[in-house]
Length: 197
Ligand SMILES: Cc1cc2nc3c(=O)[nH]c(=O)nc-3n(C[C@H](O)[C@H](O)[C@H](O)COP(=O)(O)O)c2cc1C
Image (cartoon, rainbow, N blue to C red; front, side, top):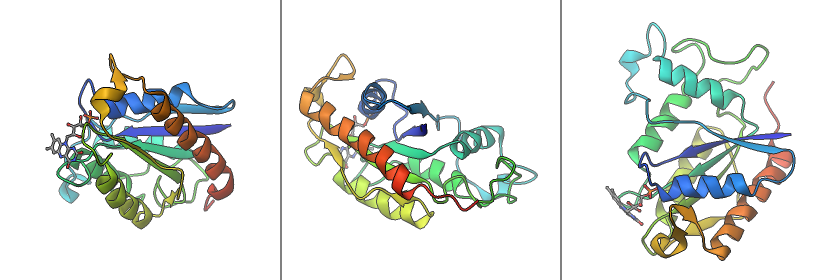
């Protein structure tokens, strides 16, 4: 069983990237599950509000992440970079246990719910570069927080307006690309999913 936790880097109701995650959920191999962890209720990161304990939405977000065998991020690109809401979520999840309370399950000795977790990135945009620049930045950030970033396959869904129909990813080539990323992530979780417990 591979439990994948999805994160969408857009809060927009009709988000293309949320659509990518739905396409990913539709292409899961047997034995894999995908649950999206919501980031819209997280407050802006501020060390001053870590005490006496992390705000409830942060604790809930972290608890979902602790259950992940793998993480799948679908992100837009904002001004050639990572959307602020996504970076904010990563910053909250990157804080060490104890700094704002404890959210780790009993017996899990990792310092954060991101540590050693296999992760894959994909992205969609109406633009022509397919979120390549934000994905590149995101790789650097995810490596820095100790995640095991899948080197390939990658999914850059540019020209999204022509590839989505009624909010769903309709373009066959793009759907195949997403399915490849999902299959790759499940395999990567088998290879790289060792935990520090
Ligand atoms: C502040 C802002 C900056 C943006 N910058 C870029 C950009 O640098 N590259 C790009 O491809 N699209 C850019 N876009 C367009 C987004 O790709 C587009 O809004 C996309 O639909 C957002 O993803 P979503 O559909 O998942 O919400 C930008 C949009 C906003 C609101």
